[in-house]
Structures are given as C-alpha cells and as structure tokens.
View 1 (spheres, rainbow, N blue to C red):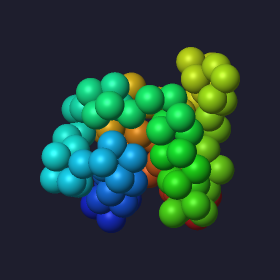
View 2: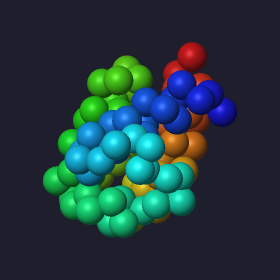
View 3: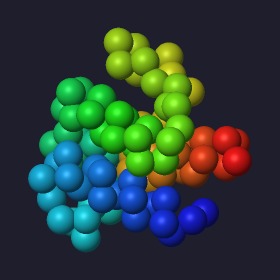
Length: 87
C-alpha cells in the first residue's frame, strides 16, 4: 500500500477530528476520534476530491456500503483499492 495514500487519508481524518495527523492511529475508529456522521460525510467528500475517486458510500445506510469505515486502517485500505481499481 502506498504511504502517500495513507498519509493523505490520515491528514483528512485528522483535520475532521481537529487533531494532529500524528495523533491518528490506524487502529482508531472514527468514533474514537470524535468524528460524527456529518464529519464522516465531510471526510468522504474530502477523500473523493483528494484522490479523484467515487466512494461507494451511502450516508443514509452506511452498513449497506462496500466502503469499510470500521477503522482508519480499513478506510485507508478501501481508498487504496479504489485508487488502484481506477488506474
């Protein structure tokens, strides 16, 4: 996996959580970081814009999405896969 992708995703999540990127660990959940559903949606938009990808995420029914948001690591992995699939 690309460290650049991980770094950028962590930076986006950290900005939403109003934390330093160094305070965001891959095992954290968004809940651990204090990111609510609105923050999640804003993070998804920021990720889509940063990587020029379309994230298959339904804010009204997150569990129905193919996009795993269970932890920072799972989000990084999902973004990396979307970026790879697009290239």
